[in-house]
Image (cartoon, rainbow, N blue to C red):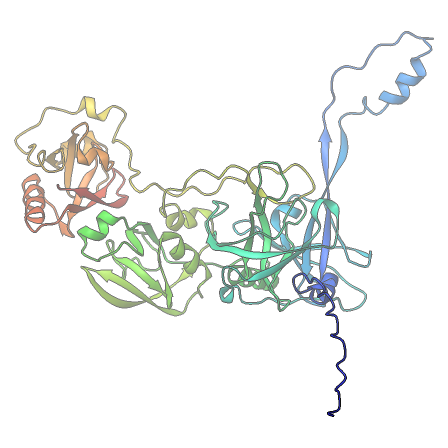
Length: 519
């Protein structure tokens, strides 16, 4: 008889424990000490609200009213307005980064650390165009600090952590992902924001946005919120922009941006087609600033910049931002499209000295849409103001009429005027003689063919051409007579091109490039 084998009963399986996402507690604990609360105060004069009430002598209320209103008679009083924001330590010696709108106009700035200690802060420098500021405290011992990471390595979908002071609740940690990059929210000329769904609220302004290695890859700055609370759309200044600004503020107390000295406009599909460059891309040079870095070359009006110092230029705001970030006084390679052919030239940037000079480059950038409703700095402990107005760029077709009602007051056409292009683009032209130069107040340096009439509903009107403007070039060929303009447009159309590429000057000589349909 065989030996029976004992069979042990089946071991009951234990139910698996539910587990959530991987904890970020270790990461957060090492970073909290470097994130600070920024408390500011400002004196605000309070105007009197009207005459003091008259109380009869001996009234039982006389003493009460005298105590309550005793300060009113000495003039307006000062109230203290307080606000809160966030910041972070980037150097153990006490340098702290925050937003400009957190500390703007503050009389006193106090930094509150995670252990509850407080230090008075000094403003080292601020940059309103990127909404960044650097503060300095004098700590009794080295501070916990964090380092900048490379925001260019971050991808949409990467996890990020925000730490800050929302609604005065210091040391708040939130986690989310990068929702988008390169966002333009019309906050300034160098917009290039990271968008995140990590919860950012009032008071988070100036706080850091970390990658999962504990490096700062953005400075939380703004939110979109109809209610004032987080709806999962927050914006941070990327370190690829912020780090250079912060370093300059620490070293110089101000920013030192590059300046190319050109006016630019977008490359429309029509311009791309008429210039035979394929898809629309780059930034189109519509003017050169007299006395600027490239006033004598090598960049010319009509060039399209597609790469600057090895960085691609997809649209006009890319050029504005990259030029500002590039080194001054060093030779830089620029890739341009000229006459449909790609070539590389070398330029040396000057320094952008002030806002008047800045407008030469940024105002011609592109027509910007109005600020998106609800976009505002994300935290100062008070009601969020609307996003401050930005330097408005010049529209693509901005030139005004030579004078009010110019279309109704022009003189009868002489033999030099002819509606020869009426069937093509819908304008009547004239030679630009001395009499017409005076009549239309056209500057001496402007040369070309004068537009004396723009037909209502025409292609020219649709592209913004105005009476009193001057056609300087057609397809990069200088125009002297109305007949030459008509012949050139006819020739272009005969080649199968769908639009004519015109350089237009206003009465002051400001240039822009317009592609007018020929079909």
